Length: 349
Image (cartoon, rainbow, N blue to C red; front, side):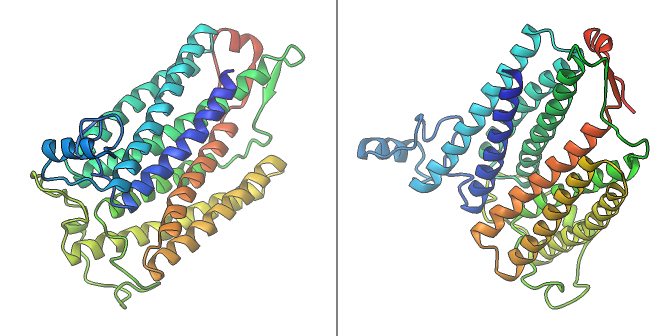
């Protein structure tokens, strides 16, 4: 049951990330001007009476039905994921799972609760870019924790088999930990830059590739690119940054993509040199996702951010992160002994 719930939760977290991306792309982040309800109701108003009540409560925010539904579907999916995480935590403590697994489930609960708060602040602070960025990163954090939970639980199951005294997950002592962790760091940084680009509506700042505004080095400003916008009570829907700020954000996002690609290619090359068949397959999967992401990033610019391409760019980024975390967590568990599992001790490389 625990393993099945992890798998279901992983499906749900991808759905939630996809719905979150759709909510941003359809400008539905303020489709419901209140939280957790929508115009004071559990579902978006769709009757004459409900619409009149919504107009009376929020005269400054007229109902746009498809945006309201998009926002509420996202909220209900996120709520369902939260229930699954609570169930995972309950089962972990009821079935005497090792302490590390229990700590991971508790961490997941904390992240999900924090995500709910950021979801609320996204609405109440009217899409203020720092909050929107952190909200997106929270979804990716949930994904990483679930992948780590699945890897550790798999190791626990295999090591607990009576026929096995120990299970070795690292088939080679030369697993490239340093380059793997470096690639993960750069990938997380790049996803953060992508979230910052999205929350500042800078995706179309450079509608050409590989140049930006037909220049190899446009007029960019580091200070402007990463300066936190002052908060006020006005909406940040569609962004409020000037042209130079948006170009700067997009430019550094592209620079980050170049550095991340180099790091991932180097890590993949080191993986392919190993004798482990499993690692080779994972390396090929990483390469496929990486080149798919590059193509989608280029198409997003030159095709002026079509919905399907932009959504794919978000989901492949999540898949790329999940694959990298899976490779790292499954390889950094070296030897797990049955007696050590019983005492809740898991040793790492």
